[in-house]
Image (tube, rainbow, N blue to C red; front, side, top):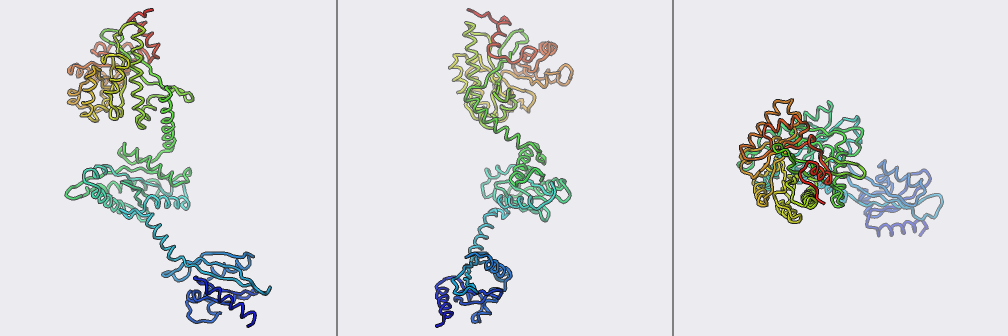
Length: 565
């Protein structure tokens, strides 16, 4: 046996032991590679049952991509290489990982190398199928959030112009009520029907996806500028206008739509979607289509930062109460004080209650904050009694949030505070906003009755700014109506405000309630309120909110009592 025949035999033994298509080739100079040996799998792959070496080699090398890859390998000086190869026609394509490895060669004028194929067609098809399943909403068949994010990423990379496309977020209203009253199957049916209507409302080329629950997203090409987004929103509202039939019921579903326009400042898809969701939340409140305004995310981040700082302030005892006098207008004396929470931050200075109270309500911190306020106010009043050596004829008023009224047991909180400070319930007034009382009148009624059992005075704050029902007002145990400052401040120059104040005073008198006017800033306003029969006044004309010691000194100066040694 010649040396060449022995090499060929050795190659054939090696190749036949491999379970994958494999062939040994020899390259000499610039000549085309010559097939030395191939195993049966390779011959099958070449789709030639019986053929000469030249035919098999040309069949495999006829693909330009493979020929180029092999040529690069032979001239690279590397010992091995891998590349992906797509074989077959468009209908029946196969994916292979092609391996190239140098083989020992006896001569210096040629190079022997091994060509192997690993068929990855089944694995790639399974991967594609799994990926398609992962990017598809199982209920509606629409793209899901991941697919939508990828589409927005692609749009950001390929589209030109700062406002070439927009993202709309559509959130259904009243959907939760359908789920609660009719069950999940009816809810699913509604989502499917809504998806079909939304598809019909969009143009060709627009992408609709379901982000989850009752929230849909639309990637909208702006062919004629930002106005296209508003036109799309109107079409969506029109598509949902017709009632939906579920079983034997017809249900009307509306939606809130938020829009975020592409801009030079946005380079991430998540930012664009998040901005549209910010706008959608505003749309829920306004009832109209809202477009994201720059700075909303920064505001939200500041609120989260404030939440952290507020939690630390409550735990560290950094909050204080200021006390604003409540003046008996008919008796011209101090009747009590309203306790107002104040926050002086070490780095940011004074933080307005308008800012941090809303953060406390949103985060749930209003519960520990409210408990602290009741305890602090009652303890301060007890301290004043001790300094005076007698029980002072004044009370302290504390504001109660609507959120706290729902989440906390205010009767127990108040009872514990009174017992800890040894105060009678008549020394404490709780001020609840009109909206807090009216939002859930049944629960409010039960809670107020429990509080009244402690002899606590109940005041309805900001009266006249909401939508009170006179029936609730008559039924609930309310002692005081507080006239909102918007009617009191500048009332002498506004006939309508005077008329409203007069009407509130008449209503309170008819119901046997006292009244407190907020925002009294001039002597003329105080005199007018006194003449109209208002019970109490509160405002800068009498005094600004005072620190506890200053409030006590204010009592001394007023002649309410004389400080004893």
